[in-house]
Image (tube, rainbow, N blue to C red; front, top):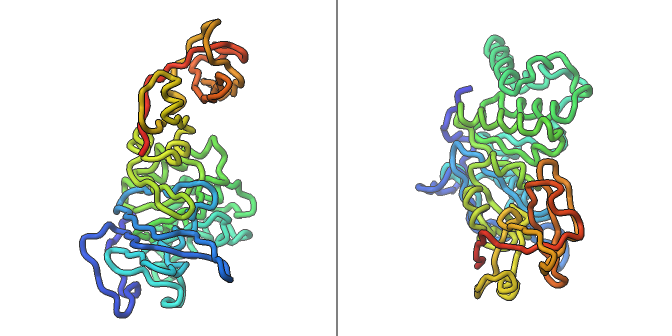
Length: 351
């Protein structure tokens, strides 16, 4: 699948000025609110961000943080109240400026598989996206795309007979068969069983590495994208609160929201930190795995809850005033009621 990185003439907007030196996708001062009346609800507010070419960027945040709205603004399905999205320096046209909304160089896969023809087979769903002007090319591109998503064996199966994960692969195949430059995915793993999730992530990653495709995806579960994404955009109540590589944001979260979102981190005030033997003037983020527990009959903390996670346990410990979540890599070592000392092995100061 060879991608052509040219700016489609139909995507230019009259009177638009090209901007040089920007990332592939650039949003500046982007805002959008919904609802009529005196107090419309802001979905995104004054967002400025950049998305690099040939990378996987994940937009994450709590429910209602504006993730899907931002994705629709990037694609041109929504018109911003203020600000603009630019693609290769050109402003993305809004629905008022384009007969069929959506940027020509992008394809979007929504959550509900709305675009799939339920009673047609897999082959026809994908092949229908290509013109009949060159049937050999149409056959070749359809075959190649189905093979890349590892669903060529399902070619004659009806969409209605497929699992959620298989439907997701068909929807992505439909989006990719026309060789877009950007693939937008709204909660792509929502209906995929956990056992097949990693395989789909690996396939998407492989396509990106082989073709140079740019992927922008929305996820409510950061654990899904920590190992997959090259960059994270973190939203809170429609505002950008962090943007960087996943490893950097995980190890050095800039704020409590990001720390909790990515790592279920413990947020300790300066006073709490003092209780744990740390002299700090600011609040600290302490991930559960950054804590060490040692059983001792006279210890000040007690294990109040044990949550089995398979090869490890998540423990809730408390000294009566301070509640702490810790990781136990040896299940069964700290039963409920065990008194423990809590040692902080690592922490990160918060702004």
